[in-house]
Image (cartoon, rainbow, N blue to C red):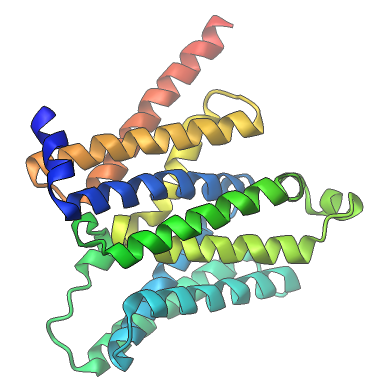
Length: 274
């Protein structure tokens, strides 16, 4: 372990990977908490797959994949929100629609690009070691913006999570707050691609929250617990992936899953002892 920590500060790419992972470990469950309570957990998976479409489009047009992922994810998030609120299509159906169409479009666009050596594996499963300095700075800026957003709109978000009608009666500008939150979710999804990948992003947003919910605490305490579970899962997964040359994204999510099993058992024990 001592050698691992030495290596962490010896190599720039490992230091960047560690910093980026920590930022996402805080940001993902904080956003995920509101998604889980509002029964929109699948939104994270949907936006992750939409971000892959942005990456594919960037490859086709020869621009930065990060720019494409952010732009397409934001547009899709607003589209999902508008279609969901219209009431014409059920929320689950809207999410499946966007996920399926975006994934199919990504496959077709990559095929049309004629680039045979495109390595989408890092976007599917994550690749911490390839996080650039620019991506790390973007993550840091996003985290600061998210903290300010949660600090300013915590009460409206809380009321919106409990009941949308209650939020309206309480004077919350539901449309504005909801749009801002969905936009933040889209940015988090796009920014996390390189960390855990498309297929695992939803798990990182949801599993730590599920672990925290097992203890039946208040809303704020549950958010803090979920962040604690997320950071712990990242630290375990990060060091295991480096020590045994394992895929970082998969190892982190498996660690989160193991912590959920432990939380489930401990939470059940607490309920028995009460």
